[in-house]
Amino acid sequence: MAIEKKFFHDKTVLLLLTTNAILVFFSIAMILIRMTSSRTGIYIVQRRANLGIDQYTQGGVSTIIGFIVFCLLILVSSTFLSIKSYETKKYLTFVILSLATLLLICNFIVSSSLLAKH
Image (cartoon, rainbow, N blue to C red; front, top):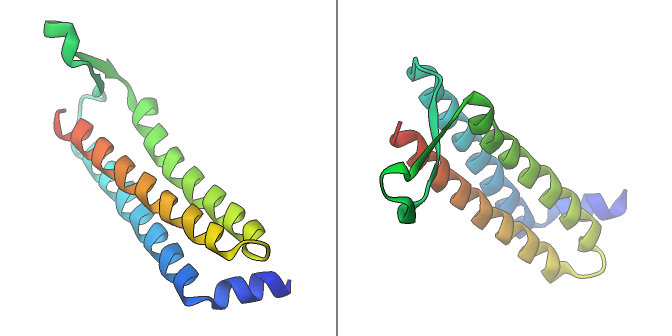
């Protein structure tokens, strides 16, 4: 329990955790708003530039929900891994949370670009 207390009192860790939580919130909100504004229920889930006319692959709502699940999975797993690694290697905690931030930004960009093509 003392490790978690030290973990949550570290200002850099709190900054990274807050950044990740805000990114997850905005990603989920953006995905849900764009999904509810669309009435068809068919979404573009892949774009392959080398296929010519058939470069867009369509999918359903469950494929887009995968982006939300991925956001939550990144947030939970990075927090768990960083708590476990905080006592032994503090710098590894910062790396884990920073890479989670990068993954969340990439997820936000990809999901917004796919939903914009809809």
